[in-house]
Image (cartoon, rainbow, N blue to C red; front, side, top):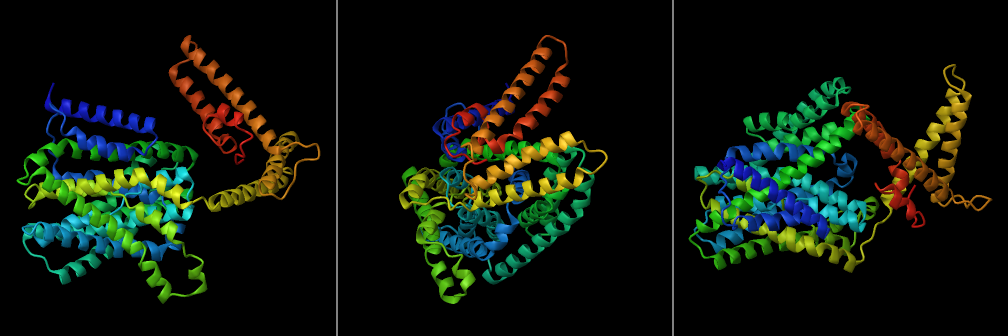
Length: 545
Protein backbone atom coordinates (compact mmCIF):
# COMPACT_ATOMS: atom_id res chain seq x y z
CA UNK A 1 0.00 0.00 0.00
CA UNK A 2 1.38 3.40 -0.96
CA UNK A 3 2.16 6.01 1.65
CA UNK A 4 -0.68 8.30 0.56
CA UNK A 5 -3.20 5.45 0.68
CA UNK A 6 -2.16 4.46 4.20
CA UNK A 7 -2.34 8.09 5.30
CA UNK A 8 -5.81 8.57 3.86
CA UNK A 9 -7.09 5.34 5.39
CA UNK A 10 -5.64 6.28 8.78
CA UNK A 11 -7.26 9.71 8.65
CA UNK A 12 -10.68 8.35 7.75
CA UNK A 13 -10.59 5.63 10.39
CA UNK A 14 -9.42 8.06 13.05
CA UNK A 15 -12.13 10.60 12.25
CA UNK A 16 -14.85 7.94 12.19
CA UNK A 17 -13.79 6.32 15.45
CA UNK A 18 -13.40 9.63 17.33
CA UNK A 19 -16.74 10.92 16.10
CA UNK A 20 -18.49 7.71 17.13
CA UNK A 21 -16.91 7.94 20.58
CA UNK A 22 -18.03 11.56 20.91
CA UNK A 23 -21.61 10.45 20.21
CA UNK A 24 -21.39 7.69 22.80
CA UNK A 25 -19.98 10.03 25.45
CA UNK A 26 -22.39 12.84 24.46
CA UNK A 27 -19.69 15.50 24.21
CA UNK A 28 -19.06 17.92 21.31
CA UNK A 29 -16.91 16.23 18.71
CA UNK A 30 -14.10 18.87 18.72
CA UNK A 31 -13.19 17.82 22.27
CA UNK A 32 -12.71 14.16 21.30
CA UNK A 33 -10.93 15.14 18.10
CA UNK A 34 -8.31 17.23 19.88
CA UNK A 35 -7.70 14.46 22.44
CA UNK A 36 -7.58 11.68 19.88
CA UNK A 37 -5.64 13.74 17.37
CA UNK A 38 -2.99 14.57 19.96
CA UNK A 39 -2.53 10.90 20.80
CA UNK A 40 -2.47 9.64 17.22
CA UNK A 41 0.97 10.99 16.50
CA UNK A 42 2.48 8.65 19.08
CA UNK A 43 0.89 5.48 17.66
CA UNK A 44 3.70 3.29 16.24
CA UNK A 45 3.63 2.69 12.51
CA UNK A 46 1.52 5.65 11.49
CA UNK A 47 3.02 7.64 8.62
CA UNK A 48 4.55 11.10 8.99
CA UNK A 49 2.40 13.72 7.28
CA UNK A 50 3.92 16.86 5.80
CA UNK A 51 1.55 19.55 4.63
CA UNK A 52 2.30 22.33 2.20
CA UNK A 53 1.93 25.46 4.39
CA UNK A 54 0.85 27.56 1.40
CA UNK A 55 -2.16 25.32 0.86
CA UNK A 56 -3.40 24.98 4.44
CA UNK A 57 -5.03 28.39 4.82
CA UNK A 58 -6.26 28.35 1.23
CA UNK A 59 -7.97 24.95 1.55
CA UNK A 60 -9.43 25.22 5.04
CA UNK A 61 -10.17 28.85 5.88
CA UNK A 62 -12.39 30.20 3.03
CA UNK A 63 -15.15 27.58 3.36
CA UNK A 64 -15.06 27.55 7.17
CA UNK A 65 -15.24 31.34 7.44
CA UNK A 66 -17.78 31.76 4.65
CA UNK A 67 -20.26 29.31 6.06
CA UNK A 68 -19.86 30.62 9.63
CA UNK A 69 -20.87 34.04 8.29
CA UNK A 70 -23.61 32.64 6.05
CA UNK A 71 -25.36 30.93 8.95
CA UNK A 72 -24.89 33.86 11.34
CA UNK A 73 -27.46 36.50 12.30
CA UNK A 74 -26.74 39.97 10.86
CA UNK A 75 -29.43 41.36 13.15
CA UNK A 76 -27.70 40.00 16.24
CA UNK A 77 -24.33 41.17 14.95
CA UNK A 78 -25.71 44.70 14.66
CA UNK A 79 -27.40 44.57 18.04
CA UNK A 80 -24.27 43.31 19.79
CA UNK A 81 -21.90 45.30 17.57
CA UNK A 82 -20.12 47.14 20.36
CA UNK A 83 -19.57 44.06 22.53
CA UNK A 84 -18.45 41.98 19.55
CA UNK A 85 -16.11 44.71 18.31
CA UNK A 86 -14.49 45.16 21.70
CA UNK A 87 -13.93 41.43 22.10
CA UNK A 88 -13.02 40.70 18.48
CA UNK A 89 -10.49 43.51 18.20
CA UNK A 90 -9.59 44.73 21.69
CA UNK A 91 -9.41 41.30 23.30
CA UNK A 92 -7.62 39.80 20.30
CA UNK A 93 -4.94 42.49 20.39
CA UNK A 94 -4.59 42.16 24.16
CA UNK A 95 -4.34 38.35 23.95
CA UNK A 96 -1.72 38.53 21.21
CA UNK A 97 0.29 41.01 23.26
CA UNK A 98 0.09 39.17 26.60
CA UNK A 99 0.97 35.84 24.99
CA UNK A 100 3.87 37.48 23.17
CA UNK A 101 5.20 39.04 26.38
CA UNK A 102 4.95 35.80 28.37
CA UNK A 103 6.44 33.67 25.57
CA UNK A 104 9.31 36.10 25.07
CA UNK A 105 9.98 36.21 28.82
CA UNK A 106 9.98 32.41 29.18
CA UNK A 107 11.99 31.80 25.98
CA UNK A 108 14.44 34.71 25.70
CA UNK A 109 15.76 33.45 22.34
CA UNK A 110 12.28 33.82 20.87
CA UNK A 111 12.10 36.97 18.74
CA UNK A 112 9.26 39.41 19.20
CA UNK A 113 7.92 38.67 15.74
CA UNK A 114 7.73 34.94 16.51
CA UNK A 115 6.18 35.67 19.90
CA UNK A 116 3.50 37.85 18.32
CA UNK A 117 2.86 35.15 15.72
CA UNK A 118 2.15 32.71 18.56
CA UNK A 119 -0.11 35.30 20.20
CA UNK A 120 -2.07 35.82 16.98
CA UNK A 121 -2.51 32.06 16.52
CA UNK A 122 -3.87 31.71 20.06
CA UNK A 123 -6.14 34.78 19.90
CA UNK A 124 -9.20 33.73 17.83
CA UNK A 125 -11.95 31.68 19.46
CA UNK A 126 -13.87 28.75 18.01
CA UNK A 127 -17.61 28.58 18.84
CA UNK A 128 -18.34 24.97 17.85
CA UNK A 129 -17.98 23.21 21.19
CA UNK A 130 -19.12 26.14 23.34
CA UNK A 131 -22.34 26.81 21.42
CA UNK A 132 -23.16 23.09 21.20
CA UNK A 133 -22.95 22.85 25.00
CA UNK A 134 -24.76 26.16 25.54
CA UNK A 135 -27.68 25.24 23.29
CA UNK A 136 -27.98 21.81 24.85
CA UNK A 137 -28.22 23.31 28.34
CA UNK A 138 -30.60 26.09 27.28
CA UNK A 139 -28.58 29.23 27.97
CA UNK A 140 -30.02 32.57 26.74
CA UNK A 141 -29.84 33.00 22.97
CA UNK A 142 -28.13 36.34 23.41
CA UNK A 143 -25.09 34.69 24.97
CA UNK A 144 -24.86 32.15 22.14
CA UNK A 145 -25.14 34.93 19.54
CA UNK A 146 -22.37 36.86 21.27
CA UNK A 147 -20.02 33.86 21.26
CA UNK A 148 -20.72 33.18 17.58
CA UNK A 149 -20.45 36.82 16.54
CA UNK A 150 -17.18 37.34 18.38
CA UNK A 151 -15.66 34.26 16.77
CA UNK A 152 -16.78 35.39 13.34
CA UNK A 153 -15.01 38.74 13.56
CA UNK A 154 -12.00 37.86 15.70
CA UNK A 155 -10.81 35.33 13.13
CA UNK A 156 -10.21 38.22 10.76
CA UNK A 157 -8.50 40.54 13.24
CA UNK A 158 -6.27 37.77 14.62
CA UNK A 159 -5.16 36.60 11.20
CA UNK A 160 -4.33 40.17 10.14
CA UNK A 161 -1.93 40.32 13.12
CA UNK A 162 -0.72 36.84 12.16
CA UNK A 163 0.15 37.92 8.60
CA UNK A 164 2.07 40.96 9.80
CA UNK A 165 3.96 38.99 12.45
CA UNK A 166 4.85 36.11 10.09
CA UNK A 167 6.15 38.55 7.48
CA UNK A 168 8.25 40.25 10.13
CA UNK A 169 9.60 36.94 11.47
CA UNK A 170 10.63 35.77 8.01
CA UNK A 171 11.78 39.20 6.83
CA UNK A 172 13.59 40.04 10.02
CA UNK A 173 12.01 43.38 11.04
CA UNK A 174 9.00 44.38 13.14
CA UNK A 175 7.73 47.97 13.41
CA UNK A 176 4.70 48.38 15.68
CA UNK A 177 3.61 51.66 14.06
CA UNK A 178 3.73 50.33 10.52
CA UNK A 179 2.06 47.12 11.72
CA UNK A 180 -0.83 49.20 13.06
CA UNK A 181 -1.26 50.97 9.74
CA UNK A 182 -1.12 47.69 7.86
CA UNK A 183 -3.77 46.31 10.21
CA UNK A 184 -6.22 49.08 9.22
CA UNK A 185 -5.50 48.68 5.50
CA UNK A 186 -5.96 44.91 5.73
CA UNK A 187 -9.31 45.24 7.48
CA UNK A 188 -10.78 47.93 5.22
CA UNK A 189 -9.46 46.30 2.05
CA UNK A 190 -10.76 42.83 2.95
CA UNK A 191 -14.25 44.12 3.79
CA UNK A 192 -14.40 46.18 0.57
CA UNK A 193 -13.50 43.17 -1.60
CA UNK A 194 -16.01 40.98 0.26
CA UNK A 195 -18.80 43.52 -0.35
CA UNK A 196 -17.93 43.83 -4.04
CA UNK A 197 -17.84 40.07 -4.58
CA UNK A 198 -20.99 39.46 -2.55
CA UNK A 199 -23.15 41.93 -4.47
CA UNK A 200 -21.69 40.79 -7.78
CA UNK A 201 -22.71 37.20 -6.97
CA UNK A 202 -26.32 37.95 -6.03
CA UNK A 203 -27.68 37.99 -9.63
CA UNK A 204 -25.87 34.73 -10.37
CA UNK A 205 -27.37 33.03 -7.32
CA UNK A 206 -30.85 34.19 -8.36
CA UNK A 207 -30.38 32.68 -11.83
CA UNK A 208 -29.17 29.39 -10.33
CA UNK A 209 -32.24 29.08 -8.11
CA UNK A 210 -33.70 26.16 -10.05
CA UNK A 211 -30.50 24.11 -9.85
CA UNK A 212 -29.62 23.05 -6.26
CA UNK A 213 -26.35 21.39 -7.34
CA UNK A 214 -25.12 24.54 -9.09
CA UNK A 215 -26.32 26.72 -6.25
CA UNK A 216 -24.44 24.76 -3.58
CA UNK A 217 -21.31 24.65 -5.77
CA UNK A 218 -21.45 28.42 -6.16
CA UNK A 219 -21.76 28.84 -2.40
CA UNK A 220 -18.61 26.76 -1.98
CA UNK A 221 -16.78 28.90 -4.53
CA UNK A 222 -18.02 32.21 -3.06
CA UNK A 223 -15.61 32.23 -0.13
CA UNK A 224 -12.66 31.59 -2.41
CA UNK A 225 -13.77 34.33 -4.83
CA UNK A 226 -13.33 36.87 -2.05
CA UNK A 227 -10.40 35.26 -0.23
CA UNK A 228 -8.00 34.77 -3.14
CA UNK A 229 -8.24 38.27 -4.71
CA UNK A 230 -7.91 39.87 -1.28
CA UNK A 231 -4.79 37.84 -0.52
CA UNK A 232 -3.33 38.72 -3.93
CA UNK A 233 -3.85 42.41 -3.11
CA UNK A 234 -2.21 41.94 0.32
CA UNK A 235 -5.36 42.64 2.32
CA UNK A 236 -7.38 40.35 4.58
CA UNK A 237 -8.79 37.41 2.65
CA UNK A 238 -10.33 36.23 5.90
CA UNK A 239 -12.50 39.33 6.24
CA UNK A 240 -13.26 39.10 2.53
CA UNK A 241 -14.67 35.57 2.94
CA UNK A 242 -16.60 36.60 6.07
CA UNK A 243 -18.07 39.68 4.39
CA UNK A 244 -19.27 37.85 1.28
CA UNK A 245 -20.89 35.28 3.59
CA UNK A 246 -22.74 38.03 5.47
CA UNK A 247 -23.96 39.62 2.22
CA UNK A 248 -25.34 36.34 0.91
CA UNK A 249 -26.74 35.49 4.35
CA UNK A 250 -28.83 38.66 4.40
CA UNK A 251 -30.22 38.00 0.90
CA UNK A 252 -30.59 34.22 1.37
CA UNK A 253 -34.43 34.21 1.48
CA UNK A 254 -34.50 35.79 -1.99
CA UNK A 255 -31.79 33.64 -3.59
CA UNK A 256 -32.71 30.19 -2.24
CA UNK A 257 -35.73 27.88 -2.34
CA UNK A 258 -36.64 24.96 -0.05
CA UNK A 259 -34.80 22.31 -2.06
CA UNK A 260 -31.67 24.48 -2.33
CA UNK A 261 -31.75 25.12 1.41
CA UNK A 262 -32.14 21.44 2.30
CA UNK A 263 -29.33 20.46 -0.04
CA UNK A 264 -27.09 23.24 1.25
CA UNK A 265 -27.66 22.46 4.93
CA UNK A 266 -26.73 18.82 4.42
CA UNK A 267 -23.68 19.65 2.32
CA UNK A 268 -22.27 22.27 4.66
CA UNK A 269 -22.88 20.22 7.81
CA UNK A 270 -20.74 17.42 6.42
CA UNK A 271 -18.07 19.67 4.91
CA UNK A 272 -17.55 21.77 8.05
CA UNK A 273 -17.32 18.63 10.16
CA UNK A 274 -14.77 17.02 7.84
CA UNK A 275 -12.60 20.14 7.61
CA UNK A 276 -12.51 20.51 11.39
CA UNK A 277 -11.88 16.82 11.90
CA UNK A 278 -9.05 16.69 9.36
CA UNK A 279 -7.32 19.69 10.93
CA UNK A 280 -7.26 18.10 14.38
CA UNK A 281 -6.14 14.72 13.13
CA UNK A 282 -3.48 16.17 10.81
CA UNK A 283 -1.91 18.07 13.70
CA UNK A 284 -1.94 14.88 15.75
CA UNK A 285 -0.06 13.05 13.03
CA UNK A 286 2.71 15.64 13.25
CA UNK A 287 2.90 15.91 17.03
CA UNK A 288 5.42 13.11 17.49
CA UNK A 289 7.89 14.62 15.04
CA UNK A 290 7.34 18.08 16.54
CA UNK A 291 8.35 16.83 20.00
CA UNK A 292 11.28 14.83 18.61
CA UNK A 293 12.74 17.85 16.80
CA UNK A 294 12.77 19.97 19.94
CA UNK A 295 15.97 20.49 21.91
CA UNK A 296 13.90 21.18 25.01
CA UNK A 297 12.77 18.39 27.32
CA UNK A 298 9.14 17.30 27.42
CA UNK A 299 8.59 18.70 30.97
CA UNK A 300 9.94 22.05 29.78
CA UNK A 301 7.63 22.01 26.75
CA UNK A 302 4.63 21.10 28.89
CA UNK A 303 5.50 23.88 31.33
CA UNK A 304 5.66 26.40 28.51
CA UNK A 305 2.37 25.10 27.15
CA UNK A 306 0.70 25.43 30.56
CA UNK A 307 2.00 28.98 30.98
CA UNK A 308 0.79 30.14 27.56
CA UNK A 309 -2.57 28.40 28.03
CA UNK A 310 -3.06 30.04 31.43
CA UNK A 311 -2.18 33.41 29.89
CA UNK A 312 -4.83 32.99 27.18
CA UNK A 313 -7.54 31.93 29.66
CA UNK A 314 -6.74 34.56 32.31
CA UNK A 315 -6.53 37.37 29.76
CA UNK A 316 -10.05 36.63 28.61
CA UNK A 317 -11.34 36.31 32.17
CA UNK A 318 -9.86 39.66 33.18
CA UNK A 319 -11.02 41.44 30.03
CA UNK A 320 -14.64 40.28 30.23
CA UNK A 321 -14.86 41.14 33.92
CA UNK A 322 -13.33 44.62 33.72
CA UNK A 323 -14.16 46.23 30.36
CA UNK A 324 -17.97 46.08 30.92
CA UNK A 325 -17.56 48.24 34.01
CA UNK A 326 -15.47 50.74 32.08
CA UNK A 327 -18.18 50.92 29.40
CA UNK A 328 -20.88 51.36 32.04
CA UNK A 329 -18.96 54.31 33.49
CA UNK A 330 -18.61 55.96 30.08
CA UNK A 331 -22.05 55.17 28.64
CA UNK A 332 -25.00 55.51 31.01
CA UNK A 333 -27.77 55.81 28.40
CA UNK A 334 -31.00 53.98 29.35
CA UNK A 335 -30.98 51.81 26.21
CA UNK A 336 -27.49 50.62 27.05
CA UNK A 337 -28.50 49.73 30.59
CA UNK A 338 -31.11 47.35 29.18
CA UNK A 339 -28.36 45.44 27.34
CA UNK A 340 -26.25 44.80 30.43
CA UNK A 341 -25.73 41.26 31.66
CA UNK A 342 -24.75 40.02 35.09
CA UNK A 343 -21.44 38.59 36.21
CA UNK A 344 -22.72 35.02 35.90
CA UNK A 345 -23.36 35.39 32.19
CA UNK A 346 -19.97 37.04 31.75
CA UNK A 347 -18.27 34.14 33.53
CA UNK A 348 -19.90 31.66 31.15
CA UNK A 349 -18.86 33.84 28.20
CA UNK A 350 -15.31 34.04 29.52
CA UNK A 351 -15.12 30.28 30.01
CA UNK A 352 -16.43 29.72 26.47
CA UNK A 353 -13.33 31.15 24.80
CA UNK A 354 -12.17 27.88 23.28
CA UNK A 355 -9.68 27.66 20.43
CA UNK A 356 -10.01 25.38 17.43
CA UNK A 357 -9.86 25.09 13.67
CA UNK A 358 -8.66 28.59 12.77
CA UNK A 359 -5.80 28.44 15.26
CA UNK A 360 -4.84 24.99 13.96
CA UNK A 361 -4.92 26.13 10.34
CA UNK A 362 -2.82 29.20 11.12
CA UNK A 363 -0.23 27.11 12.97
CA UNK A 364 -0.01 24.55 10.18
CA UNK A 365 0.33 27.34 7.60
CA UNK A 366 3.60 28.63 9.08
CA UNK A 367 6.43 28.44 6.50
CA UNK A 368 8.68 25.41 6.93
CA UNK A 369 11.66 27.71 7.54
CA UNK A 370 9.79 29.77 10.15
CA UNK A 371 11.96 30.30 13.28
CA UNK A 372 10.95 27.94 16.11
CA UNK A 373 8.10 26.57 13.99
CA UNK A 374 7.86 23.30 15.94
CA UNK A 375 7.73 25.14 19.26
CA UNK A 376 4.97 27.46 18.04
CA UNK A 377 2.98 24.47 16.73
CA UNK A 378 3.36 22.62 20.02
CA UNK A 379 2.33 25.61 22.15
CA UNK A 380 -0.64 26.33 19.91
CA UNK A 381 -1.82 22.74 20.30
CA UNK A 382 -1.38 23.04 24.08
CA UNK A 383 -3.64 26.11 24.12
CA UNK A 384 -6.25 24.36 21.97
CA UNK A 385 -6.08 21.27 24.18
CA UNK A 386 -6.38 23.28 27.40
CA UNK A 387 -9.29 25.43 26.22
CA UNK A 388 -11.24 22.77 24.37
CA UNK A 389 -10.77 19.90 26.79
CA UNK A 390 -10.43 21.58 30.20
CA UNK A 391 -12.92 24.36 29.57
CA UNK A 392 -15.18 22.34 27.28
CA UNK A 393 -15.66 19.50 29.77
CA UNK A 394 -16.22 21.86 32.72
CA UNK A 395 -18.48 24.36 30.93
CA UNK A 396 -21.69 22.32 31.56
CA UNK A 397 -20.86 22.17 35.28
CA UNK A 398 -20.24 25.94 35.35
CA UNK A 399 -23.53 26.72 33.59
CA UNK A 400 -25.47 24.57 36.06
CA UNK A 401 -23.54 25.90 39.07
CA UNK A 402 -24.24 29.51 38.14
CA UNK A 403 -27.89 28.78 37.45
CA UNK A 404 -27.87 30.06 33.88
CA UNK A 405 -31.18 29.25 32.20
CA UNK A 406 -32.93 30.02 28.94
CA UNK A 407 -34.62 33.43 29.01
CA UNK A 408 -37.32 32.24 26.62
CA UNK A 409 -36.63 34.94 24.00
CA UNK A 410 -36.20 32.46 21.15
CA UNK A 411 -39.41 30.60 22.05
CA UNK A 412 -41.38 33.84 22.23
CA UNK A 413 -40.03 34.97 18.86
CA UNK A 414 -40.84 31.58 17.34
CA UNK A 415 -44.39 31.70 18.69
CA UNK A 416 -44.86 35.24 17.38
CA UNK A 417 -43.66 34.21 13.90
CA UNK A 418 -45.89 31.12 13.81
CA UNK A 419 -48.96 33.14 14.78
CA UNK A 420 -48.23 35.87 12.23
CA UNK A 421 -47.69 33.30 9.47
CA UNK A 422 -50.89 31.46 10.40
CA UNK A 423 -52.96 34.67 10.48
CA UNK A 424 -51.56 35.68 7.08
CA UNK A 425 -52.38 32.26 5.61
CA UNK A 426 -55.99 32.43 6.86
CA UNK A 427 -56.43 35.93 5.45
CA UNK A 428 -55.02 34.81 2.10
CA UNK A 429 -57.31 31.78 2.00
CA UNK A 430 -60.33 34.05 2.44
CA UNK A 431 -59.08 36.17 -0.44
CA UNK A 432 -58.49 33.19 -2.72
CA UNK A 433 -61.77 31.41 -2.07
CA UNK A 434 -63.41 33.72 -4.62
CA UNK A 435 -60.92 32.82 -7.35
CA UNK A 436 -62.20 30.63 -10.18
CA UNK A 437 -59.44 28.05 -9.85
CA UNK A 438 -60.04 27.32 -6.14
CA UNK A 439 -62.49 24.71 -4.80
CA UNK A 440 -64.73 25.38 -1.81
CA UNK A 441 -64.06 21.93 -0.35
CA UNK A 442 -60.30 22.49 -0.47
CA UNK A 443 -60.56 25.98 1.03
CA UNK A 444 -62.82 24.73 3.84
CA UNK A 445 -60.42 21.87 4.60
CA UNK A 446 -57.42 24.19 4.79
CA UNK A 447 -59.29 26.82 6.82
CA UNK A 448 -60.22 24.17 9.36
CA UNK A 449 -56.59 23.07 9.69
CA UNK A 450 -55.34 26.63 10.08
CA UNK A 451 -58.12 27.43 12.55
CA UNK A 452 -57.01 24.53 14.76
CA UNK A 453 -53.41 25.72 14.47
CA UNK A 454 -54.41 29.29 15.36
CA UNK A 455 -56.33 28.18 18.46
CA UNK A 456 -53.46 25.90 19.50
CA UNK A 457 -50.97 28.77 19.26
CA UNK A 458 -53.31 30.93 21.34
CA UNK A 459 -53.31 28.19 23.99
CA UNK A 460 -49.52 28.09 24.00
CA UNK A 461 -49.43 31.88 24.39
CA UNK A 462 -51.69 31.57 27.43
CA UNK A 463 -54.49 33.54 25.77
CA UNK A 464 -56.95 30.66 25.51
CA UNK A 465 -58.09 27.99 27.95
CA UNK A 466 -58.98 24.39 27.10
CA UNK A 467 -61.83 23.85 24.69
CA UNK A 468 -65.31 23.59 26.15
CA UNK A 469 -65.27 19.82 25.81
CA UNK A 470 -62.01 19.72 27.77
CA UNK A 471 -59.89 18.90 24.73
CA UNK A 472 -56.33 20.14 24.73
CA UNK A 473 -55.48 21.19 21.19
CA UNK A 474 -51.91 20.10 21.88
CA UNK A 475 -53.18 16.52 22.19
CA UNK A 476 -55.18 17.03 19.01
CA UNK A 477 -52.07 18.20 17.18
CA UNK A 478 -49.98 15.27 18.44
CA UNK A 479 -52.67 12.76 17.49
CA UNK A 480 -52.90 14.19 13.98
CA UNK A 481 -49.12 14.24 13.66
CA UNK A 482 -48.90 10.62 14.76
CA UNK A 483 -51.54 9.62 12.23
CA UNK A 484 -49.83 11.44 9.34
CA UNK A 485 -46.47 9.97 10.34
CA UNK A 486 -47.95 6.47 10.33
CA UNK A 487 -49.34 7.02 6.83
CA UNK A 488 -45.98 8.30 5.58
CA UNK A 489 -44.22 5.24 7.05
CA UNK A 490 -46.71 2.96 5.33
CA UNK A 491 -46.19 4.63 1.95
CA UNK A 492 -42.43 4.52 2.34
CA UNK A 493 -42.48 0.80 3.18
CA UNK A 494 -44.60 0.07 0.09
CA UNK A 495 -42.27 2.07 -2.17
CA UNK A 496 -39.19 0.31 -0.79
CA UNK A 497 -40.94 -3.05 -1.20
CA UNK A 498 -41.69 -2.30 -4.85
CA UNK A 499 -38.02 -1.52 -5.37
CA UNK A 500 -36.96 -4.69 -3.61
CA UNK A 501 -39.14 -6.94 -5.78
CA UNK A 502 -38.01 -5.21 -8.98
CA UNK A 503 -41.28 -3.47 -9.83
CA UNK A 504 -39.72 0.01 -9.78
CA UNK A 505 -36.17 1.24 -10.20
CA UNK A 506 -33.96 2.73 -7.50
CA UNK A 507 -34.27 6.12 -9.18
CA UNK A 508 -38.06 6.07 -8.93
CA UNK A 509 -37.84 4.88 -5.34
CA UNK A 510 -35.50 7.76 -4.42
CA UNK A 511 -37.80 10.30 -6.09
CA UNK A 512 -40.84 9.12 -4.12
CA UNK A 513 -38.82 8.64 -0.96
CA UNK A 514 -37.61 12.24 -1.14
CA UNK A 515 -41.18 13.50 -1.49
CA UNK A 516 -42.19 11.53 1.58
CA UNK A 517 -39.14 12.76 3.46
CA UNK A 518 -40.06 16.38 2.68
CA UNK A 519 -43.59 15.72 3.90
CA UNK A 520 -42.26 14.18 7.12
CA UNK A 521 -39.89 17.10 7.67
CA UNK A 522 -42.95 19.33 7.54
CA UNK A 523 -44.17 17.59 10.69
CA UNK A 524 -41.02 18.48 12.64
CA UNK A 525 -42.36 21.69 14.25
CA UNK A 526 -45.22 19.69 15.73
CA UNK A 527 -43.14 16.74 16.88
CA UNK A 528 -40.33 18.58 18.69
CA UNK A 529 -37.99 15.79 17.59
CA UNK A 530 -36.99 13.84 14.53
CA UNK A 531 -38.42 10.67 16.02
CA UNK A 532 -42.20 10.86 15.65
CA UNK A 533 -43.08 7.88 17.80
CA UNK A 534 -40.89 8.98 20.68
CA UNK A 535 -42.17 12.52 20.53
CA UNK A 536 -45.81 11.48 20.53
CA UNK A 537 -45.28 9.17 23.49
CA UNK A 538 -43.91 12.21 25.33
CA UNK A 539 -46.86 14.41 24.34
CA UNK A 540 -47.58 15.24 27.96
CA UNK A 541 -44.14 16.82 28.48
CA UNK A 542 -45.09 20.36 27.40
CA UNK A 543 -43.59 20.27 23.95
CA UNK A 544 -43.86 23.27 21.68
CA UNK A 545 -46.27 23.11 18.72
